Length: 476
Ligand SMILES: *Cc1c(COP(=O)(O)O)cnc(C)c1O
Image (cartoon, rainbow, N blue to C red; front, side, top):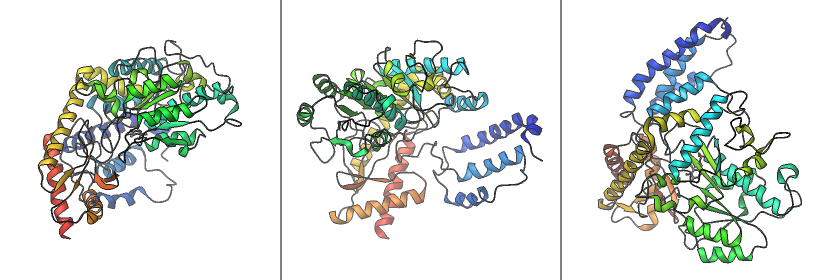
C-alpha cells in the first residue's frame, strides 16, 4: 500500500525526477511549438476513476512529467503572445520550487517569521522599483484581479465610512450605490472585483471620448461634480488591446479636486515606471490611493503572483481584518499578519520567487528586460507597418502591438471574419500563439511581449507565421 508515511525516503528522489526532466524541458523550450496538439492525446491518461491502490510516489510523478512536458501549453516559452503572459526567470522558477519545498504558512507571523519578513522586504523593493512612496501599505495577492479587489475593497471601506457605515462590520445594506467612474480601458477584472464586493460590475460609469475608450477628462470632471458625496475613480495604466494609458496625473488632479478615491490598475503597465523611456506613461501613479499590479506578467515570476499598494496602510487592515483580528497591522511591524491585510487567509510564501528574481537581477536587470521588450514591440510595429498585407491599428507605446491582416483587394466587410479565421488558425498551428480581440469594433491581433526569453528571432517568426497562415486562410 502506498501510504505517504512509507514513502518518506522518496521525497527527495521525486524532486530529483523533476530536476532531471527540467533540464531537457528547459533546453527545448525556446524551440518547442507553443502548443503541440499531438500532446492532447495524452490528456486521457490523466483521467479514470480514483485509484483505490495508489501507484506510489515515483511512478505518479513520472507519469505526470511524461504527460505534462508534452501536453502542457508551453506558455512560459518565448512565443506565447496571446494575452499578457510572462514566463519564469531562472531565479524565480527555482525559488518557486523552494516555496514548495519549505511550504510556509505565509499569512501568520507566528507561523512563519521568514515568509512574513520576505513579504515585507519584497513589498518595499517593489515600491522602490516603481517609484511609489515607501509609506504605502501593501500585500501580495494571487493575481491582479485580487489586487484590484484589494484596492477596491479599501476604496469601498473608505467610501462607506463617509456615509457613516463600517462596511467591514455591517455590510452594504442601506447604503446607496457606490459611484465608480473609469475610461473605456477599464479591465474586466476591475468589474469582477466590484461584482465580488457587492457593488455590481455594471456600476462602472464609463466616460470615454472615442470608440477606443480614451477618457474624456472634461466629462469626467462634470460627472464627478454631479455626484453628491465621495466617488471612486479607476485609472487604467496599460490597456490590454494597445498598451495605451489613461492620463494618471490628470485623473489624480480630478480625484483631488472632487475628493474621490483613485485606484490604478497597472497589471502590466506599472512596469513602464522601470524605464526612463516609458516612465512618463505612469506619471502621477504615486498620487493614487491604491495601485494593483501583477508579478506573473512582466516581472516574470511564476503564477500566481500579484500585489496591491494602498496610500493609507491602515485601510488594508480595516477592509480585510478578520473577526477579532487587530486591524492596525502595518508593514513596519515585525510581527505583521498578512492574512489580515488581503483577501486570503492561508496562503503560500509567494514573496520568495519575487525576492529571488529581484535579488538575482536587481533594478538594472529588470530595466534591461523591460527595455528589450519595448525594442521588440517597436520592431514588431515596424515589420507590421512594412508588410503590405498587415495594418497597424494603434501606435506602439509599450509591449502590445495591435494590428490586423488586411490584404489588398479584400472588402472591408470581410476583414473581421477573415481575421477571426486567422486567429483560430494561428492557435491551431501552434508555432506562435496570438489570438484575436475586438478593438474599435474590428477584429484584430494584439500580441503582447513580456516574456524574458523572447528575442528578435521570435518576433520575426511571429510576423512570418502570421503572414503565411493568413494567406493560407485567405486561400482556403
Ligand atoms: C491581466 C490583467 C488583469 C488581471 O490580472 P490577473 O492576474 O489575470 O488576475 C487586470 N488588469 C489588466 C490591465 C490586465 O492586463
